[in-house]
Image (tube, rainbow, N blue to C red):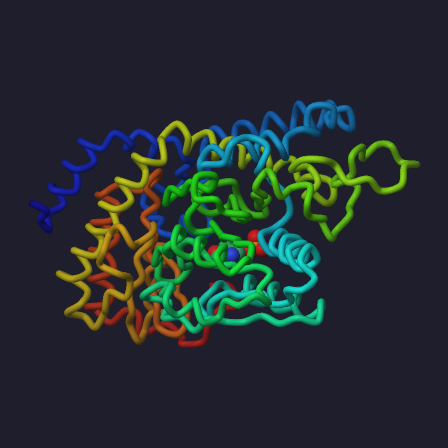
Length: 417
Ligand SMILES: *Cc1c(COP(=O)(O)O)cnc(C)c1O
């Protein structure tokens, strides 16, 4: 039986097969309780060491000759990422940002189906997804249709069907809601869009490395996601995109950069797109970020997605149990779903003073993040968070709020939250 003692948490860590991974990330501040791995994952020691070698021995010494072995990294790292999301080799490439990848795929989907001018997403989707899709549709004289969604409940397939007609080129949703962690029903929603003749894109930003998915077996057309969250690849690391194999050559990348060409170094040739997933790159790949993504993906593969997901469900359940006992009496509510199978890797709590609480908590070594209007997001990333970390973080939060310490923080927001 779960109980509220530190001893219970320590025992879970003793029994945890994944606990060893906690010591494989850089921890310059042993007192820090980091619950924001879904915004920027921690730095694996292997990644730091490999980046040092890359800087000294490859960039510094090999200089331009390094491209001989760097050139294939976007595809190689893509394959490694693909193995975490159920994609057979040759369908994932690591490149650009999620926003740019979304744009390329949305425009490609619109152009390939001239009779279909509409893109569909839900009102709760991440801002960049809504903005990019809207811009892509309007520039092509189409429109973005928003399915009204309660982000805490997730997307209701019944409410989507009325938005699907024979004018829809592509439907794009997030697998895991960035605010509430609600897991959307990928199988049903994909099937529904396909029945309407539309292509389907899934944004895996908050699921890769956290919630398993099998893109190939579900029959998803496109996916995008980033590597700096649960993949721990660091600030500015590249995103990835998935294009199902049989679609790769039927569609055109609207940004015809040289790296999307059949032979980037045949500089006199007119543009001929590469065959295969390479067609979806644009310009020079970011090698430092790619190498970090490679290490991050290797670490997750070693831990195993099934084990990570099992631990993640237990950590978030534990966090909710402690919230019910200690934080709800202080004015918090649990805003994420209480069904572990329907909840991704983080938990969102509601409190009128969420922003000030997140600031005062960060100053006390508990780093989560606030999301407007009143949400506190806490992500116990299963690779790097122990049960004792969750216990200690919740004790600190409880004591801070009980003492009113947050009321001394100015209420104006910082630009980056
Ligand atoms: C983090 C996140 C992004 C990030 O997009 P970038 O363009 O890579 O900065 C996009 N979509 C979702 C759902 C996210 O959570």
